[in-house]
Length: 116
Length: 110
Image (cartoon, rainbow over all chains, first blue to last red; front, side):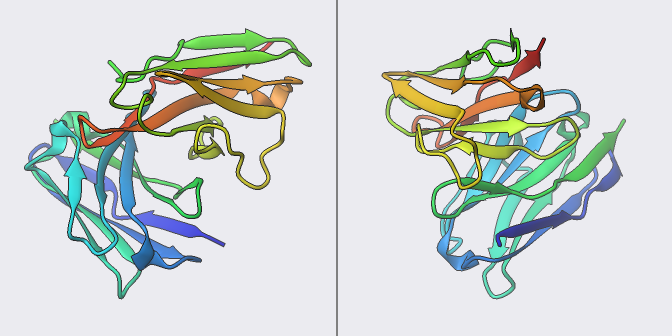
């Protein structure tokens, strides 16, 4: 069974930093692209970033470029999102997402709250 | 403003068939496959349709997806009260080098 478990969210002041983690199991982590997707309170879904199987290629939504860094550790079956210079508008539930054999699998999400 | 356009709301009565549209462009829906997600209140999104029209294991065949050109649709037949949720479409966008989502459609079962 594919499982994705996010952690690392919390309350941080504007300008602060947080590192999110996503521990996975139930599939060959090193064989799949991984994504972070976020959802602000009461709003829709927004793709944040993704990373290639071997970590050699990453893409980001414009609003986080230069502030967020996606990375992975295939030996630990884990995905990360380093978030710096956080803004109030980064407040959201952050989901770890991957496509294994076709459909997407989502974690339960971790809440990041940026206060002003 | 979302790159993919969905109606903000839809509704139907039990047993009815409803469709939700998703409009995009040549750089996303027109050249890549579309996924649909269902999000029940307070929960993470769940894959409903992938690769335009494929259903993951466990998803009832009441749910179906289709695509034509730069638009896609999700159809729900035999509407049930438990189908009341938010529905999102998504596709990869070649111009943005990222995944794009629709703004979501809130489905109400009357």
